Image 1 (cartoon, helix red, strand yellow):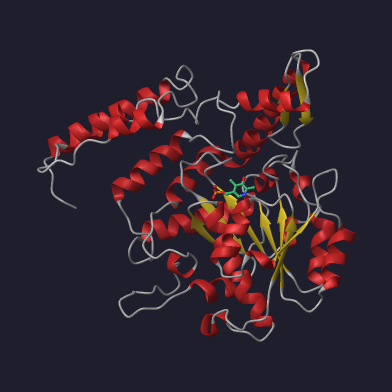
Image 2 (tube, protein in one colour; image 1 turned 90 degrees about the vertical axis):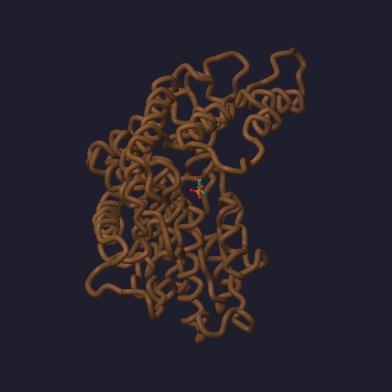
Length: 424
Ligand SMILES: *Cc1c(COP(=O)(O)O)cnc(C)c1O
């Protein structure tokens, strides 16, 4: 690091600290949405790049001023859009320390502390989410990156079973693969499929039933249709709009019978497994081959943080590991580079370690149950108001309501217009 005067460091970090405390303290009073538009923000931020630089403390003061109106109150209790979490105090503090420590968490050798913290936190996550003891894991940037990680392993593994080694041969000429999922699948699966070279034509969308999930017979039929095609099945633990859980106990055995790889999108829903009251929703999910979930949503770890888990650690390592002459590969220790798509990387395990330690097992289940209760109350109470239509009552922590146009004789189009106008 460049050597700075201690007083300069104190001034800039102190300014950031004071502002952070003030920002967090005022979350309940600040607008939850943006109050400045893109033009204003750009004007505020777009200073001429200075020739000779700016003092660190002035940079931070300027940054704080310049983002005014463009920072959402997503961490506050009045923000209801998207699946976005807040930050537990210890997780936020650990995240600050992660930056201060500035570790490169690629290798055990480049940060023994980061490697061991991830090792421990990964084990805690497995335990709390009810995943197999031997499952390998990677701390990545989010569920999108977790999908990419898991589906890369799935692709290599499934094609290996068909006598095709993706690592050496690539995908040109490989057997055409198929990715089966619900039509409600999160678009991050499509993106992962695209980036992995499988092509969106490989995706087969099945229509969900009235409960917004796939059915056993439907999946069996889809698999029977092209029995000899290498297949990945993506099932949802917590649909993005409804929180619906696929019936894993019925679906996964069907998938296994056909030799398909089962991947779970459990971005937030997988956390239901941490609560005795909601665990039944995830029953059977443990039989899958890989799982993706987030730390920055329900666990309230600061952005960005996601987790990839793979049942077969051999398959996981085979896809991700890399060797180079200058890498000091550890023996008997965990090198994240063997499990992650990244090379150099942030030591993001510290924040998860802190969050899980702060909450403990019952703290996590309380968090899940409390927020589900809030969602339920919110939807029920909204439903009591005039001109509000409840479209979906929460299974876990989300419901759907529609704000109707109150004018007599309003049409569906009028209702939709009103709903759109409520967005802002
Ligand atoms: C948020 C979300 C994702 C994407 O996760 P990121 O953490 O934003 O990468 C994938 N699937 C579902 C169901 C989600 O809610």
